[in-house]
Amino acid sequence: MRVDLFDFDLPRERIAARPAVPRDSARLLDLSDAALARDRRIGELPALLRAGDVMVFNDTRVMPARLMGRRGAARIEITLQKRVDAATWDVLARPAKRLKAGQTVDFAADFSATVVQRDGGAVRLRFGCRDAA
Image (cartoon, rainbow, N blue to C red; front, side):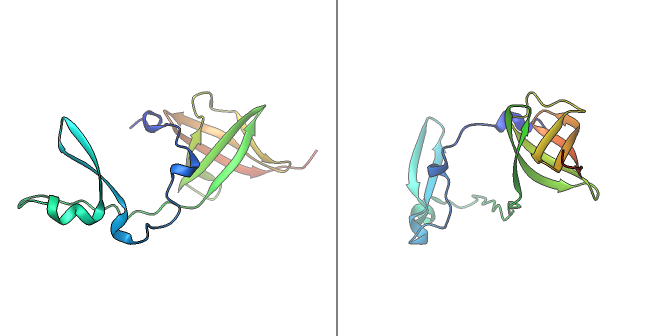
């Protein structure tokens, strides 16, 4: 799967940082009519459900592991996804389009990562420390 196809700009103020208060005031996108998307509230959900409907719950958690680095003059945002071994992680990188195997992303004077491989927006990095110049 090419995760870069899901990449889009989302202003920080549009990202929910905490649950809605009251909880049933949380927003809900109603796509029951394919021709008309409706903005609703979660409190309306019971009235929208019909016999035979299936609900899918996403209970995954985002690992709070985001790093800001640089590749030359370009700023790179890295979100750790899955640990491969002691020094290697599968990550999401923004922007990922220009990252190539062998390139270095610097996070601090003595801490960087090397791009091992890239597949769409998915990137594998090998982290390491180096002597500060």
